[in-house]
Image (cartoon, rainbow, N blue to C red; front, side):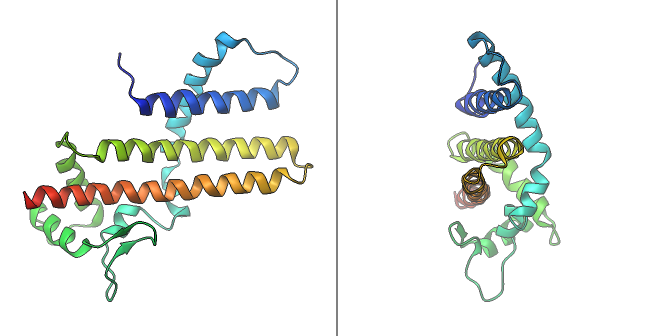
Length: 198
């Protein structure tokens, strides 16, 4: 079985961190065997990955919507869609091309983005798989930070400096998730437009 770097980072590394944090909070007096950390961390990471996928709709609500929907919704009078840091300047061209390719003039953003994903996933010489892996990793890290912060604040709520540190780390993880979600959606659409021009 071959593991990609994403599997290693999202399952094993993040799983070990969360497993260790939970162990330290719940079982402070019990020593942990070193041989147990890696397999337990991988299992925790696997379920953490599944849970992060499950709460993805909630995470999208915290960033004001699904990035692909926002990127494919041109705003009159504005030359770009997206967020300030991740801008997409070809929304009109992408929507026009996708509606033509799907043969559906009323295609919604989900159908159009699904078609674009199908087209670019067949191209092995693009950065979309890496971008998808980075997005998924940032989603798992945000979920891990969220769970860890809740556990830490339950245990150490009376320590005043734990709150600003926890909130700062959570905000950084949330912002990185938001940026990576937009980068991934933009990469899919840019790659689709590149394929169209070939």
